[in-house]
Structure formats: C-alpha cells, structure tokens
Amino acid sequence: MPIYTPSPPAALLTSSSPIIPITIAPVIMASGKIMAAGRNQLLLPPPIRQFKYSKRVVLKSILDREDKGLAIAGQRVVVGGWVNSRKERAEDDDAPFPTPPAQADDVLVQYVPFLRPISSVPVVVGGGARATAKDKHVLVYLLINDGSCSTNLQLVMDSSMFIPGNVVTVGNSILVEGVLRRTWTRRKRVVELIVEKTLHVGAVDLKTYPLAKQQLSLLSLRDHPHLRPRSITIGYVARIRSNLTCASHAFFNDLGIIHVHMPVITSIATGAQSRRFQVTTLLDASDQVQVDLEAFKAAVQEKRSRIDELGRGGNNREALVAAEQDLERSMELVRVLEEQRKTASVYVGVVKLSDDFFGRAVYLSTSAGLHLESYACALSGVYTIGPVFQADDDESQSAKKLAEMWMVEVELAFAELEDVMNCAEDLLHSLCYSLLATAGSDLKFASKHIDRNCIKRLQSITSRAFDRITYSEALHILNQAKDRSFLAEAVWGTHLSEEHESYLANDFFENPVIVYEFPKEIKPFYVRVNANAKTVSAFDIIAPKVGVLVRGSQKEERLDVISKRIEEVGLPHEQYDWYMDLCRHGSVKRSGFSLELEKMVVMATGITDAKDAIPFPRAHGDAKL
Image (cartoon, rainbow, N blue to C red):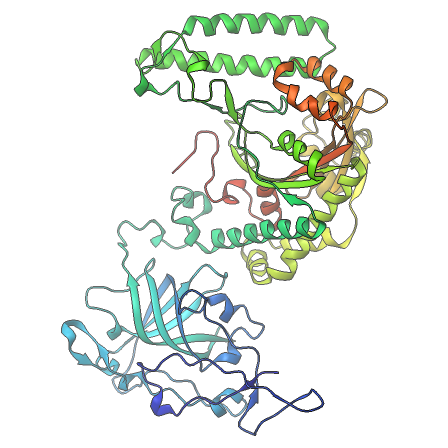
C-alpha cells in the first residue's frame, strides 16, 4: 500500500509555495509484504492526480472518491470550474480566516501542519497595494463545477482576493489554488477548498447571462443550447451518454466486431417508415434557380391516380402506405413552392437534377443498415454509431420525436434471428452494468432529482433475461387486458401503439420484452420472409419508459425473394441493384439491429424528453444553432 510522507514545515506553506503531491514510498520486505517505514508514515488511499494536460485537478478525482475527498484534506491543489452559486458572510474584525480544526481522531491532522490563517497571507488588491484578508471582513463561498461530476466543490475565499470591480458571480469561470480541508454541511462531513491564490477569473454579465436565474427548467434551457451544458442536469446526461457510447464500443471490441464509419448522405431509401431530408444546392434562392411549379402539380395528380389503383387492388398495404406518404411530401413541396413564388424567392422554371451537386437526388440517411450489410458480407461482424435523420412532420412535438437521432447499428454475417436477439439483449445488459458500475454518483443524482426509479430500472434489466413473445402473442395479451383500455385496438397487421408498448413493458412484464415475427406489411422490404409468407424475421425490444428501444431483423439473402419484395413495395430496381449483388455474389445469412441512443439515455437518466438527451436537438420547427 502507498505510504504517506509528511509535508514540509508550516512556515513553507505560503501562497507562493508550489503544489506538493503526496509521494508514494512503499517499503517491501523480503517476503513481499509491505511494512511501515516509521511511526510518522501513514497508510493512505491513493492520492489525487493532476489532469495530464494542465496543472488543474479534476473535481471528480476529489469528490467521487469513496471517502468523498475527506482523506486527502490538507493537500494543496489547483482547481477550476464555473460558478453555480455565491454566498457571502461578514466576519468579525478579529476573527481569523477559517483553518481546519484539530481533532484527536483525525489522523491527517496529526501529520499535516495547520495552514497559516490567510489573514497573514499577502494578497494584491487594486492599484498594486499590498493588504491582508483581515483588512476585508467578508468571506465568499462559491460552489463550482467543472463538468466532470454532478457534485459541486465549495470554495472559501476572502473578498480581498477579487480585483475591484470584478466581483465573481454565477457564471464566472475561475481557476484557483488552495488547500483542501474538512468541514460540516447539513450534518455531513465534506471537503472544501480554502483559496490562497486566484489564477484566473472569466467575467460574465449578469444582465445578459441566461443561466443567472436559479432552477431553470429543461424547457427554458433549450433556448440556450450553447450554454445549457453548464447546468448540472444536462452535464449529468452528457456523462451518461458518453458512458453508453464508450461501453458500446467496448462491448463490440471484446467480441471482435469491427467499427465502420457509414455515410450520412445516400441516394436510397431503407423503407417507407419515414420521410427523408433531401440534400440539394438547387433551391438556394441566391442562385436564382427556377422551379417548374406546374410540373410538380402534374406529378401530384399522377400520384393520386397511383393511390387509387393500389386501393382497388387491396393486396399491397405497404406499397399503398408508401405511395400515400410520397403524395403528402409532393403536396407539401407544392405548397412551399407556391408560398415562395408569392415572395419571389424562387422563380418559375425547370429544375435539372443533373445540375445538382451530386447529379442526382440524394437524402440524409434514415439508417446505415443497408450500407453496413455490405461490410458485414466481407468482415463478418461490423457496427457503427452515427446520426440518422427522419423528416416526419410531428406537430404534436412528441417527447420521443427527433429529426436527428444517433443509432448504434450492428450487422452480423452467418447469423440468424435468434443470434442477433441474443446479441441485442447482451448489449443492453452490458450497457446497464456499465452504468451501475461506473456512473454511481451521476445515477444517485438522477435518483434524487430526476427519477427515483432510474437505478431500480437498470438493476431490473440486469437481473434477469428478457421475456420473448411473438407479435400474435402480444396482440393476445393486449386484447385480454382487463385492467386497461386502449384508445387504439390491437389488431393484426397494424403497428403496436405507444400505449400498447407501455402496457407490455411497464405493466405486464415490468421489464424489457422482445416481440418477434411481425406481419410482412409493417416491416421493411429487406427483412427475411418466413415460410408462412405472412410474417417476417424481425424483432423489437420494448423497454420500460421509452417503448421500442431496439429494432432488428434477419435480412433476406434469397435473390428471387428480395427482387420480388422490391417490386411489391414499388421501389426502383436500378437503385438497389448494388444491394441485390450481395445476394448474387456469395450470399450469406445475415442479421442485425439498431439501438436508439437517445432512448437509451432517457431510460437510464429518467428525463422525460429526448430533446434533453442529445447535445443539440433538432425537431420539427426547432433547429437552434
């Protein structure tokens, strides 16, 4: 074990003294055991460490220790952060600056000399004059946070340390040097810093600083996305998100699954589930591009005729849904162009996609799955973590809807449906284990201030295997529910609604549940069709609080079947010829899944809106910065 070496005499501990770390000097006996080297040497926990790329000590290394920093009282450190609160207390003229009280049971006090009262430490005030803290009679208590943990560190300093006219207030950044000491607050022993030297103060204008008010709501913080990370809650969410991302990488790395970067611009669609953002340079008003409005109106009429034909057929529900959504997009575009024509921001004429930047229509990706499959068919197992985009018009501003989301997407060759169901379940177990093992202080903060059930929810997920039911069994459970009525009836061939998902995960199973074997019509064209020709090899993992957290499937490896499915859905064959090559050349059974990172953050943290689970939220009608 490390052995504590006593500090220099008290006379050397001035404000100009260098930072003196605790040294490690173990004495090892011939037997391999560590022995004490003298009665003045004391066995201590590991010392705190400076951040590698500055002289600053990260607050997490002080406050997130098992002893909450109490065992390292007496050590001199440099800390920095942003001020969350400020309080002042007037002192009597003859009262010295506070020093650590001597206690018989305080082993550190026996070996660490008392700090000289700061009233005798020279400080510089305005005009370069020398004064002492005793000349001023106000102690300032600051709570600072550097973002490394949820806990604030209290700084105690004399007001004479501030430059006249530059009072440290909420929002200031500050870098100080001082000595840690123990104190009492709310009947608990905590550690605080007695400041001896101010190294930097970043000014703030309280009149314009948005976070000057205490207890701002998360909704109010969204109006200031560049500053909201300074709030304790958003900082906690960011650390949880980072933990989940790193844990995902570690999980796949341990399995030998290769990380691959995927494009966010694509010319293909992965299904008819959502609208897409088109990427173009042609509609830039500054380029004076002309648009043929009448041609777009004619296209709308043709699409209406196509919908009528599909409706009379009655056998291709997925193609009908896709056509209806395409018509809605075209009608929206016509409406926008008509408005822009009125304001003369777009001119009537003809658009040529060959003149566009890519020479063809391209979109922001709604999923990296198809591209990822091509790498799985060469590297066996691959994954990616990146953004996907859905342009759904959601006027209700659902708490679960984002236009930009981040996905963990996985594709495994030589794997069937059950294989990836097992992989997805193991991933969720691993992520929850990681949070419980390494994010304890943040989870305690969330349990106290955000959602008291968040820790229990994570523990429940790790405690047992997920139940698995078919889509048909899920409908049976929902239709047999006697204690619950649903707004939408659970019928074959329809998506499970949010209230259906909530009942299954929150009420019936009280844990994540895997639902598989969905009707062919409600899943994308690339999902493998089962032998009954009615269902496909797809699964959803429905989790408490968030609904569908993971979507996965076994992919169609049969060339004739995938070709027929593309035709049924009404997608252009030429755009997917490259994808069918995966079936033509060395076809292999393959399966994969995607996990919505924001939903995982929501489930883990207990926050109620996905917009607070992502650094810069993009949603319908809202894209600040």
